[in-house]
Amino acid sequence: MDKKERDILLIRAFKKGDAGAFEILFKLYHKRLYAFLFSLLKSKDDAEEIVQDTFVKIWEKREEFIEDYPFDSYLFKIAKNAFLNHLRKKINRKAFEERVGFWFDFSVNNTEEYILFRETQEAIDWVINTLPPKRKQIFMMRRIEGKSRQEIADTLSLSVVTVDSQLMKAGKQISAGLQKYNVLFFFVALLLGLC
Image (cartoon, rainbow, N blue to C red; front, side, top):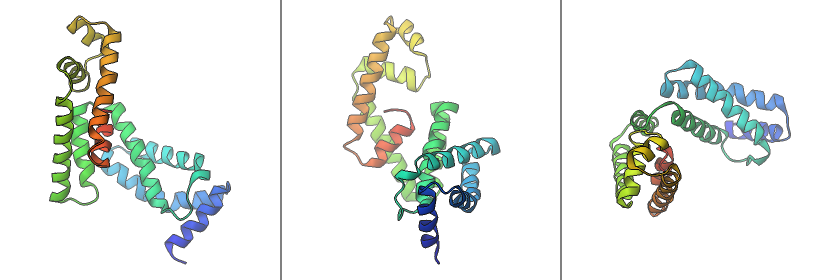
């Protein structure tokens, strides 16, 4: 029995609530996922936390799983989202951009990915530059400088409600602007918290 057939049988069982089958999948993929996350995070605790969160999420969504979809692809997709959420909470944009650059290097370290990453950054910059001046200023103060909504309001003599409104409009405009690019651009914008 090959890996794909083995995983399909295990997936069928765990979709029906078989904890034993799920435990086997956990044992088969835990170390690989942990090693990958540790290489990104350099923290045993954070990597283990994301691994646990990922498997809990998979267990909770087991009934939605498509049997012939590769388990490892699904696993790493869920882990990637957990990793990105973790980064959003823990680091500022500058550090996050450094990590995003590393993210593009994790599978294949080559010139094409670097070019793709640079093109993505240029697309994001272009869309941000299409914002009306005041909206752009508010957006940059919040996302780049890391100022609180109240600090922005005080600095620009605006209400917090106005700041929130402008940030919401900026997010929608950036999201709409990036949708004419491919999915990768939109994905990176989500990574950076731009949308």
